[in-house]
Image 1 (spheres, one colour):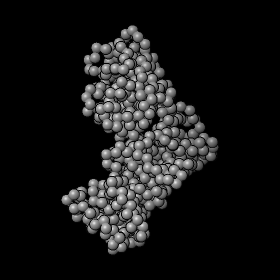
Image 2 (cartoon, helix red, strand yellow):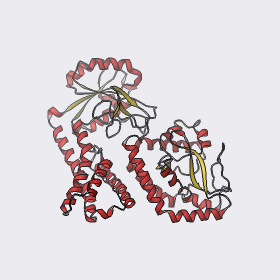
Image 3 (cartoon, helix red, strand yellow):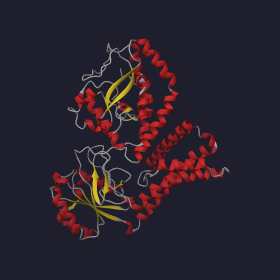
Image 4 (tube, rainbow, N blue to C red):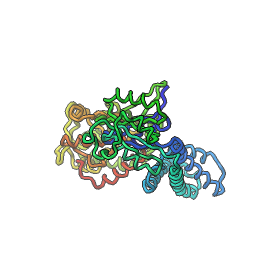
Length: 485
């Protein structure tokens, strides 16, 4: 049996328990956040979903409504969408407010689409839904403010302070120290670094904070009454790390190991417990477990609604393609999908030729193969609309790395490092790279490298909120972007 623990936030240190391990790293260097106490983590996981449900029931009863099956089903859906809540107690007030509003807007968007698809709005009082939509984020924000205030007040007590020592004064150790210093209001007191190297070989900002050598750890812990020790030594120093941990077992300090994974493409890293054996995943699809269900459910709902809405456009484009040049209306091209498996992707035909073999030439500006009508539907992305059918088939997702022709994959996997990591998820109709300027022809290697970097960044940082932002940006770019041809 395999269980999993993952903390909210990026780059928490290794501690198997409520805080868990998270190895997300946009910069290929593990960022760090000081581990929150287990009580705030547990409270945050339950607080947001419970407040959302409580607000719904409170407004419902305040309007004189009785508890019925529709409200119960809506409450269950909200719990599934919001749980686990995000630990925002350590965020600034503005960041917490923005995060809450964006996250709640995403939930409401999904629920609205479900309501239209199932015609279930008739079961609810519209005034109840409006009041609930407004009150819920206010209640969640108030809870964050109250929780943060309580934590700050608690941190003022001497017994609540946690003196912290960072072993290692490299780049990663400097990051750990910076975060600890920023968490002083929450009870973290950074004492300094222990390092054997000369200060000139360490991160510049750590020089004035080096308080001794690693061999001085036990003496330093006793002298400064250290409660937390963060080990930021490189993985190559494993023998020293093992000896250090053995020495620290003679104390009562909490030990956190912050692994230095510079140069490693860490995607959705987390710690698992596999029958008592701790296993750290370094590269995993973000769409496992509940995330996979949420992603697939949102794809089905959105694709179904969009296909219904764009049916007249599909018919008009199909007629235009048929009249523009001889050939089929829909072009089926072999592309690589999830795990690199070949799939057939549908597009409205925009060229006079249909290349689908071992060599596929990308379209260029003024390409004579492109019909006049084809140029129009490529520029406006109307040629991609049949791919919503691919989404319903389960071959694609609405948001994800754009699928490349099989011939291009074979070419670029030899030229671009970590190119095939983008195939850990289903390809998308639109993606993070496309809304950041990497739409259309990749006529240089640098452009493909940039596209792949954005695709990998999407895998590291995926959330439903991020998907909604990408969809919104795509709609805007459809009318303004001139890169596709």
